[in-house]
Length: 260
Image (cartoon, rainbow, N blue to C red; front, top):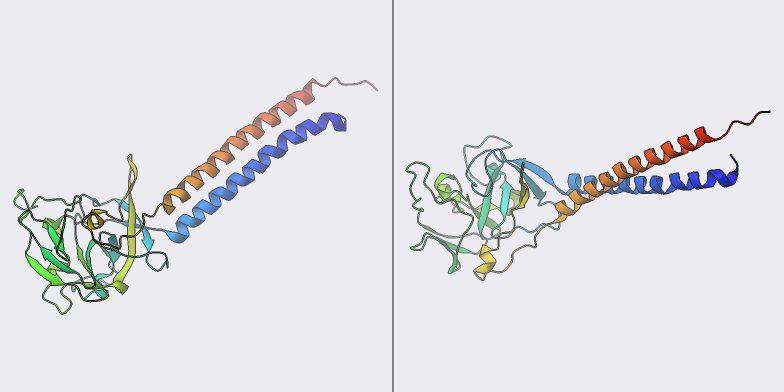
């Protein structure tokens, strides 16, 4: 086979190889972003239902990342042992929702069972409202708290089945936790068969006119689809190379054998 005959074959191999390398690069970049910027957290209790169900896997963004700002409505992972909440095992981490930040006045509740933050009524659409003991509607615990500076008030979404800041209202910090105890913000939850659902931030506080909600973090989605795109490119180009190789092999077999 002369040079003119082999050049189309070589060209047929070159493009899919380039695309395959591009796919590998995309997959590695996406995987690197996921592992570097995000963690996973297994939900162990029902205190955050229906937002987070026990046994589910949550995608979290560590607050050590300079781009993460914890705000009202965020679901956070925190260390209770740094919060003055006694009776927790060393290294334990809990997940609750931020309902008040330093300086906020938080009151529970109005006649309809809704929180009030700085005089604004919060319609918390994510709450599970039943009582786990009676099966009827949960009767909220009444309280009024001024959240100390640089601290946060945390409550579970299943208010009738959550041991949270309300259990420690009589301590010097009114049950609040320091910002330093917040380890991560839950950005999404993974549900087998249903996919990935966004969790933070919740708009209910901004809907009530309170400023400061963080921007929605879609970085994990971009990273995931970058991995998927890269994998599809690799798979498709491998199939392409297999076809090109088969055609080249078939072409060589069809060439006549010349007698000396």
